[in-house]
Length: 509
Image (cartoon, rainbow, N blue to C red; front, side, top):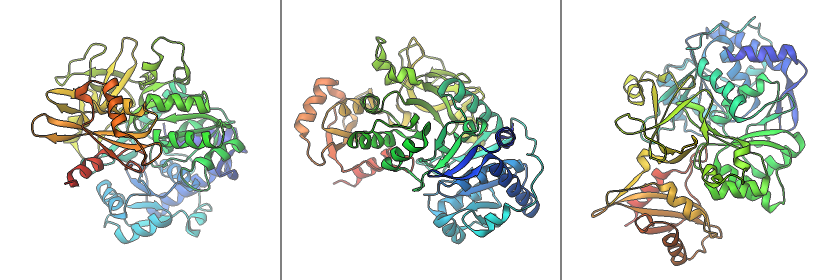
C-alpha cells in the first residue's frame, strides 16, 4: 500500500477536518493537505523525473512541510531518506551520497549548510521555507499515487552509526503497513478527535507514527519551538486535547519533572508512547503517579521499526498482579505481527528466564541494509533478525531487556548487565540519572564504573550510595568507581551515549 492512498482517502472522507497545525493554529485541512501533496508530487515528477526506484532526502527540522514532503515523495512512488536535522552537513552529505539521491528537500540552517557540502550525486535542493515551495502548491497535480508493491522501498533510515558509518535500513511498504496495523492492535486507538504532537525528531520514531493519524483523520501538530519543551507541551496539550506524543524515556522524565513542579497532571495528553532507550522501573512508577494512566511502552529498532513488543496502557498502570513490578520493568509482549524469541549464540532458542539475544521475525522486519549484503547476512539469519539486544522472556511472554550485547560487562568470568546496576542506583533518592559501563581491568577483565547525576547536583554521599548498592546488589556487580556529572551525554533522540562515557574514562589519568 502506498501511504499516499491513505491521505487521499481521508481527504475524500473528511475534507474539512483540520490536518496540519503549528502550535494551535490550523495551517491546512485534509483537502488542502492532499491537494498540496499531489501538486508537489506533480512538480517532482515532471520537473525532476522523480518516481519509483528513486530516493529523496529530507533534511529539515520539525515543521508541517515535513509531512507534505514525505507524502509528495511517496505519491511519486519514490522512497524517503529522513535525515536528522541536527547532523552535521558532512554527515548528511555522506548519507545522501551512499543512497545516491539526486534530490533533497531541506529547510533552515540545515539546508544552507548542505548546499556547501553537497555530494556530486545531489543535483537539486528545494527549500521548504522558501517561495519555491509555496509555488509548487500551484503545480499541475499527479492524478493518483503511484502503484507500489509491498516489497518496494519507502523509508531508507540510516542508523546512528555509533560503531562506524551508519547503515541504510530498507523499510518497505509492507513493513510500514504491518507496523501501522500493529499500532491499532497493540499500542493505542486513534480517532478523528485526536492529535499527534511532533516534539521528537520527525526523522525518527515520531515521524513514522504519522500514518495511523493520517488514516483516522487526526490532527498533526508541530509545536512553535519545533522540538521538545516540557512546559510548551503541557500548555499546548491542555488547549488541543486528546494529544499523543512519542518520546524517549529521558524526555518523559523531563516532562514528569516539569509537571510535578507546576502541579500539572498532563491534562489534554491522551497517550505518551515511550521507547528508544531504557525506561527504568522507578521512573515509570513516578511518571504514572504524577501523570496517571497515559503511558504505553513499545520496543523496536530501525531494523524492525516500532514493532517488536509493546507494554499496554493497562499493564503500565496495573498494580494488582503479583508480578506487576517485573512486568513494568519489561518491554512487554510480542506485538501481533511479530514472532519473538530469545536465542543462544548458536541460534538455539532458550527457555523462559534465561538471558540471550532477542531475535524477531515477521512482516515488520526490514528488507535488509542498503547495498550492504554482508551486514544484512550478519543480522538476518534464517529469516530471524538478530537485534543485538540481550534479554530474557518469562513464562507469560514478557521480555525484559538487559543491555545491548556490546554493553555487557564480563568481570571475573561473570556477566554483568549495566541496566541491572542502573536500576538499583536509580532507586536511591539522591540519584536523578545513572549510566554504567565497563572499564578494562588487568585482573578481572572488566570492572563496573558508574556515572551519576545527583538529584541535587553536585551533592551526594558516595559512601552512602556505595553502601546502598552493597545492600541491594551482589558485591561483584557493585560499581568500583562513581563519577559525578551535571548531566549524561545524550544523542539527538535522548539516548545516553555510553561511547562518550567510555571515552571519558580513557582520557582520565
